[in-house]
Image (cartoon, rainbow over the protein chains, first blue to last red):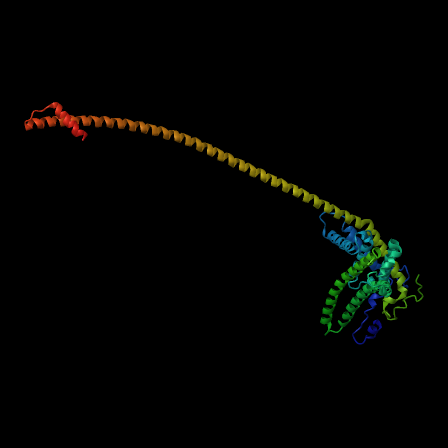
Length: 252
Length: 181
């Protein structure tokens, strides 16, 4: 996909839609080692800074009648808290801080990535796979700790006819192990595709005749991306809640 | 630990500075991304779970408490208002009943006085009427007497004129008989 796009650099049109995803060190020209301060590190830490600004500085007054920023912080808190409570159940409220961490991180990474010339960490499989597999491993471990071998009941559909149960168990098992893959690729794919499309539209702006159309296209896609940025964070969080519910209450 | 040997650029970036393939799949960068991601996640988790979430939970609980208290106070005040209205209505009804009573009493007194006055007037009128009756009776009696005397005189005169011998006793008897008629 990207190699094709690179091949189209004829005339005034230069497409490098994937260049925005290159990881590079911010200080010096050296190689990217594990601890190098890269653009990834910068935008991840900016996301942390934004979370702190909203959730800590925004609520520092502890006002009974909230300020605007405090309202937003409370809104985010209430939104995720209700999601955990409704989807996973009241007994899962003790896992709320973890789920809220995921939500705040993804939502701020996604929105910061919409700033032009920024870097989008959530478009990288390495980032979303850590999130997705982290959720998968944590939820599976929790399922076995809470229910012991009873957790395997998740794969044994007791409401189905006995003859069908082994087949269903295989299907359930496969779908269970596909979860972390789909969980992480969904987020990375959405963000990456959106940003690449923006770059492609921007590439067309080099042709004067098409430029207005291209700018219109960028505006439309950008609006869509704003929506996607929130929806993907929401989807990731609610799926985490669903998986957590399966781990806590494995019986169908 | 990523082993970097190429120096200036990674294997995933071409000589012209553009990406080769998908940068997302470049294994060279992954340790770096994962390392910083974990730092970011841990930082967010600690800030949220230690500072932000307890604080927001407290604020929300306090607000709920304030709202509940205010609602209770409002309910109290409403109750008081209702009581005040009831007291006012009661006072109004009492005043009205008292006024009614006073009016009724005054009316009764006035009626009694009026009745007395009417009775007195009736009695006076009756007395006057009786007196007049008596006077009329006296006048009528005297008139009859006069008529009798004139009739006797006239009869005696008529008898004498006719040439008869007038007998006073007979004339009186005849006149009396005529008068009784």
